[in-house]
Length: 125
View 1 (cartoon, helix red, strand yellow):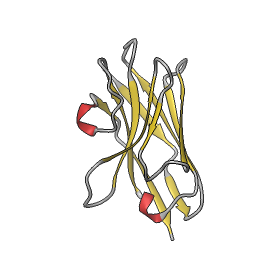
View 2 (cartoon, rainbow, N blue to C red):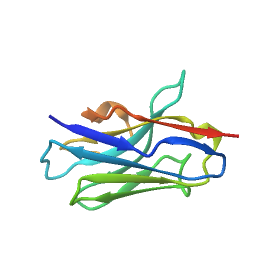
View 3 (cartoon, one colour):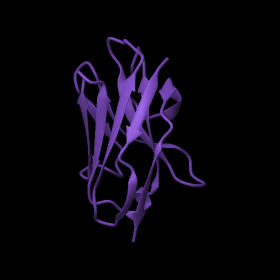
View 4 (cartoon, rainbow, N blue to C red):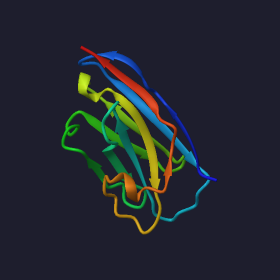
């Protein structure tokens, strides 16, 4: 059973920073992608960033490029998302998810196989 431990969410003022962490376990794929997605009230879930285990390739949504950085510690199956220069529109529940092989690394929720429960990020203006 794939399990996730997500942490790091909270309340921050605009311009501030947060660091989200996702520890995933219970799978043994040779190649996989861990992605971060977010969903605000009344909106569809959208991709934020992802990282591929085999080569460390990273992907970002245009809305977060230059502000968010994803990193992966393969030894611990832990992925972190450093979020800087936060804006009120970044407010959402952030979920991490795993895409198993064959991987595409696209930031499309439907292709991800396993999902964490999410952590709330609130950015005040």
